[in-house]
Image (tube, rainbow, N blue to C red; front, side):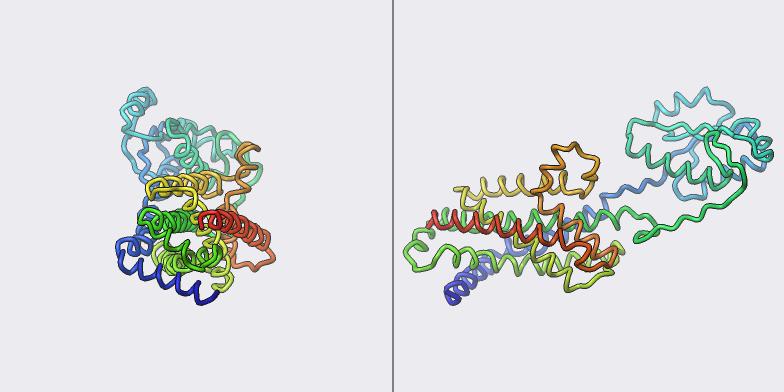
Amino acid sequence: MIRRILATTFKELLQLKRDWRTALALLGMPIVLLMIYGYALSFDVTDIRLGLVDQSRTRASRRLVEAFLKSGYFVQKAVLDDTRPLDGLFTAETIQAALVIPADFAAKTSARRPTSILFVLDGSDSQTANTVLGYARQIVASQTGGVYGIEVQAPYEAAPLVWFNPDLKSSIFLVPGLLAFILMVSSVIATALAVVREKERGTMESLRATPIRAIELLLGKTLPYLLVASVSAAGSLFLAWALFDVPIRGSLLWLAVVTLLFLAGGLGWGIFISTLAETQQLAFQLGLLSSMLPTLLLSGFIFPISSMPKALQFVSLIVPARYYISALRSIVLKGVGPEMWGVQAIALIIYAGIVLLLATVRMVRSL
C-alpha cells in the first residue's frame, strides 16, 4: 500500500516538474496575491480632503484645527468664512469633510459649557464616512473634553489601551484572513485539476487496470499538493511578518498543525470536485466558485459573522475558513494555546474527514 501511494506521489511530482508553469503558479500565486491584496486592501483612511469654517478665530479654535491637520488623517483643501459654499465643494468632490467651528466656541469651552461643533461628511461611501467620523470624534474629544454638545462635568484625560493591535492597523486584522482566502482558493483549484487531467489525457483507464485502490490514489494525488501548499503557506506567513508587521506571538508548531488541517480539507474538497467534473475548465470554475465566494463573504474575513442574518450565520458553519481564520488570529495575534481555539481545530478535523470521505467514495466509483 505504502509503495503504491509513494509511486503515485512520485508520479504527480514528476508531472509538476514537467508542467513547471503549474508548479510556479501554485508556489508563487499565494505570495503574489498576498502582496497585491495586502497592500491594496485596507480599512485605513488617510488624506481626507477637509474644508474649514472657523467662525471663532481664536487660539482655542486654531488649536482644534491644528489637531485635525496634525493627526495624519486630514489634508486642508479649503478655508471658508461661512457654510454656504460647502454644498458646491461636496458636489464637486473638492472636499470629503468639513469642520465648522461656531463663533462662541472659545467662550463656551473656557466656561465648561456644552459646545456644539458641526462636522459635515460626504456619506456616499458609508464605510469611509463612519471611519472618518470616528477619527473626528477622537480628535475633538481629546481637545475639548466633549463632542457634539455632550457636557463633561469635570476635566479628565482618557488613556486608551488597545491589546493585540495597538496601532489599530487594518493590515494586522486583514492579512490573517487574507492568508486563509489565498490558501483555500489555491489548494482547491490545484487538486481540482489533478484527477480531471487524468481523464482528459486518457490515463484514467490505465489507472483502472492497475491494482491501486481509491484511497491510495487519493493520498498519492493529495500529498504532493499538500507539500507544495505547505511551502507556499510558510512563505506567505513569512511575508506577512516581514512586509506587513503581522506578529507571530503563538507557537509555530500549533500554527503548522492548524494550517495542515485547513489545507487537508481544502485539498480534499478539490479532489472531490475533480471526481465530479469532466474537463479542467469546469473543475476550475467549480473550484473557484465553491472556495472563493464562501471564504470571502461568509468566513468573517471582512464582514463580522455576528452582524450577518441568522440564515447566513447558519450557512457559515460549513465554511472551513471561518474556523481557520479564528484559530489563526488567536495563535498569531494573541499567542494563546489550544484551550482557546481547540473547538475550531475540531471543526477543521470534522470538515477534512467528511470531504476526504466523500472524495474517496467518488474515487471508488471512478475506478
